[in-house]
Amino acid sequence: MDSEHLLPPTPRALSDVELQEVLDRAKAEGGGILAAMQILEAQAQLRETDKSELRAWETQQSLADNGLPVVEEVPALQENEDSAPFNFTGSEEEEATAIDEVLVHPAVILAPMESEPVVSEPAAPSASSIAPLVDPFVEPRATPHAVAVQPQIEILVQTKRGAKDPSSSQFWVWLPISGSLLPFGLALWLRSLGLTFAQSLVAALLGIFVSAGVVAVGAIAGKRSSLPTLVLSRAAFGVLGNLGPAALLIASRLFWALVLVILGYLLIAQNLATSSHLTAQAEPVSWLAVAILCAIVAGAVVLSSFGGLKLVWAQRVSGVLGIATAVTIAGMKLGASGLALDDNQGGSWLRALGAAVVIFALFGLAWSSASSDYASGLPVNTRGWKVASWAFLSMGLVPALLATLGLLAFGNLNDVDFAASFDAMATGQEFSALNLIVQLSLLLTLVTTIAMSLRSSSMSFESVHLKVKVSLTTPVIAAVAVALAVLGLSRLGAIGFWFNLHGYALFLAVPVAAWSGVFVSDVLIRRIAYHEVSLSRSYGFYKAANLTNLLGWALAVFVGWGLLRSNLIEFQWLGYLSGLSSNQEFWSQSNFGVVIAFAIGLLLPVAIGIPRIKNQEAEVLAIEARRNDLKDVLGLVD
Image (cartoon, rainbow, N blue to C red; front, side):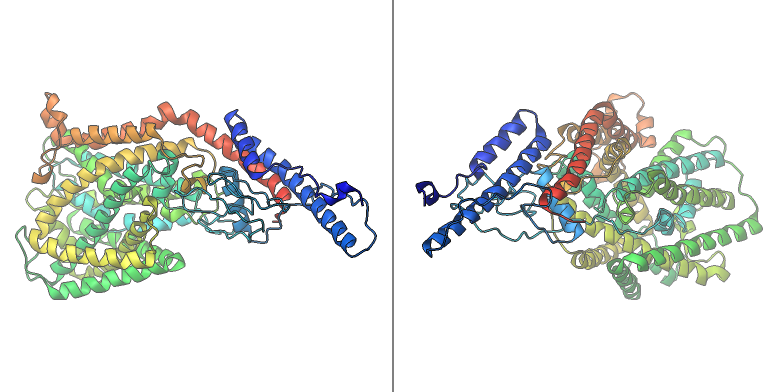
């Protein structure tokens, strides 16, 4: 045997350290991920050739040791599409997620050469297998072993390839909220402000339709991904930059879950009380009301845990029954009293503007941070305009018609406070024949909306990287909400509850409005689905932080709070910018700080962010095209 046969063949492929240096240089020179992937593909073929030549050399050595004839030449493995470095046998979702991970963070995915152990630098990822998906904050580490390791893939999100939900499902999702007595409650509140019919109608329609628009756009974002709303906002703020806005919006979600539970206790206690309604003074705790409330919230927790079709059917039944109940109440009221078109003399359009902002805060901003959660089951290829149209129809047209009907049915309430009027309608005291139907409708509405709120609140913790089970957080949130509801309402009374709700809702509306503006604008600019792996990786397409949007959101919150006035003692520090204006009445009644915060957030991505978004989408499309090619290289089969 020639002396050259005593030596192993010289490797053709680069070592791990050399390959990492080449990849870094390629990316630094502007080639980007595509250039890195081309290098990886070429090196994959070379390493496969090295492996075949090494096996041939080992065979020759074995034959020589046993005294058998030595085969002088063993042809190297031909490079073709069928010879792939890997035979990945995971599911289609695992394959797609694994490829996405490699494409976003091009770790060394090649099997190390078997001629000698490979010891890599700590910063250089090992090439023993496809890099498994890891924690967002932990970079892939080296594996100093020469033996290939079977990859273990962590499935973070669903690809929704088999989703069957039609776009019309968005109509039923929001119907429990819009198709209920809530629009009638808004009508009663507007008529209690001393506004004319025209002013009340304009305020109702303006607040409702703007709210519907925000929710409809959020539904478009939801159908583009399987992730919760507050996780999708990482595309606008960055994976780590999103933590600040998300923390405040989680607080807002928990606040509205608490409000729903308090409202439930309020209605139960009013039905059981001997007086017509609770007062603004402290009230003794009704343990029977607490027991009923616990049963209702427990039902909501169970429904939230089931989710799926059970929650969908609850939404349908609740919404249809709510619409039927509201129309029946309005019909009986109109039959008894006629149209309530008697107007106050003058009214106040400024107060009407402020009322529209409050409706936007109560009706739209309360649900904007959950707007994508209930569209995540839709197929990605569903038309966005269809999804938005059904959501807008449910959250816009239906409540607008019910609110108009309520304004026509209920006259001016200057002489009767809102709490008493809402109590009379909700408890069926005005029409005793409807009492059972009203109570059943309210019961279903409460159970369904509390379940939706609890589910969204539990899902939102993922946005701040808290990996908690929804089945554990939902009952905890519900239990805390029940305790706070009983203690809060027993201390404040009904009138005190409504007064404080107004102040806290506007305070929280400012950061939520600023976030909603940025989120809505970002969603409308985008044209393709989100790259879900990048939404959980700080080194992905959406980066760790988008300082422009993040600082813009902070500015919008600062300006919004500075222009907002509040009657609550704890919020007397608000309005620090409104003092610069000579028209103090405008800022105190219009609640325009919320509008300013929303406008700043809405215009920010349009003015600055379009090039960044278009570049992101171009990279995602290029990677999707490359992924199809990479399936052949990696030996993946659909």
